Length: 550
Image 1 (cartoon, rainbow, N blue to C red):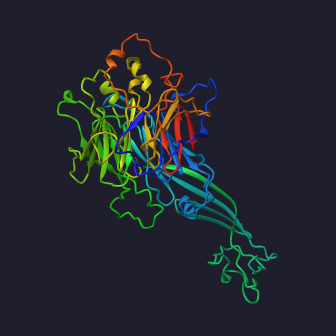
Image 2 (tube, helix red, strand yellow; image 1 turned 30 degrees about the horizontal axis):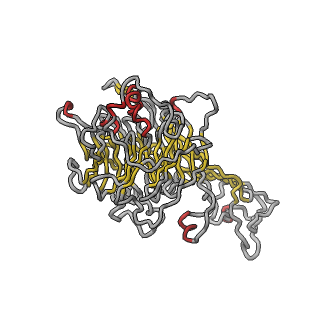
Image 3 (cartoon, helix red, strand yellow; image 1 turned 30 degrees about the vertical axis):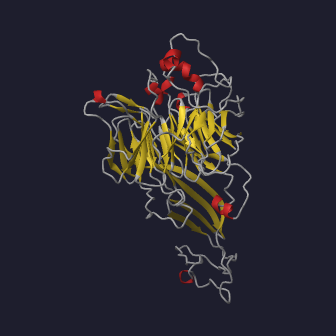
């Protein structure tokens, strides 16, 4: 593992033994491009997110589309929690299939500022599921939209001589019936007809025609009707429709970089003892962050939001840092964290004040004296933060490293992992082609024992964060993910003190990484997500979505 752990330990400090290294295998790929096929800019994936249950996965692309995938391997086995309670062994790994897609955003033009607004999806946030309808938030640079994905059913059924069509749409039932009685035939429920009438014939609740409205020659069998035959469905069609319920616009002067839903506790949908009245359950609000402000919204109110964080100075010349990412605490609905371009993370409590100018805790990694250089602040900028499922730890990603923080200890990260240390001599070249400003995402496993993030050449790395673990796996987003691994001993992060001596224009730059793999800054893996309950990683390589399991 190219990194080191703090003395206090990581998320599983109480673990008596080091967890074994996972053996990652290819699972699925969607949108795989053929050799030599040119990738369209609008098809490149720009956001990936699992829902709380892990049964659905959403991706967004630069063309403003949102694509949904659903899990299929447990569809007929019942809920996973029930199976685990019965000690049922699930041998198969998680598998997904395409569900539906819809156009979330269109390109726009701000005439007031003479600014083009791209349709690119910056982030996706899942909301609570209500009445079986999936709901999520999607955002581009300026506008957030609240979508509900409804399932529409249509049935075609035939009962006796009744041709019945039933259409169910948003709980509204429409029934069209055409009656055709034949006097020479016997109805399947025991009644017989000897004549017909042209007048409209109302139906009784059991489906038989009322005798008072028919001719007198319609006879009934002695003893009444022996049985009642119910409708039989002869065909069944299901379609999915995405409908935009709310549009949250005109609240950000700068580009929106993140949204985070204050979702219900992950167990609320499977645990009857939890309810919406519990203190850590919200499910009604979300936050959106741009470079200088964080706004708090209610899902049902799109006309107004509350500004809870504002770092804009009175004089813009005094601006020293901007907000790069924000996320709600997964357990406590009153807490959230946001990161900055200076490499710091602030934890705030909404109960302290309406405008959270002061933070509850500040997590900042202090540089050694004399180690600063021109690139120090650039590579220290945090591109993504994620809470662990238990809310105890925060994972942050800057350009060179992953850092794991304990929210009860702000003096230093409990673990630091070098992602691509071999790029340090190339920072000058990466600055010139703007690669140094790439925003890599990070993720944690559901049990908090491992972390992952992307790199260049379509590589991503998985680290074990249990104290004493040397797990450090490099995989490639392809059908053959395992790369040749170099046995690098565990070591602390390199100091920046020699940076000014190494980085200089025209220096001899290596074209391979530490494991001997070719390095291509134009091919990068920025977006990935870890399944909330299983060791399954979904990652985006250009327009292709790859999944790997262990």
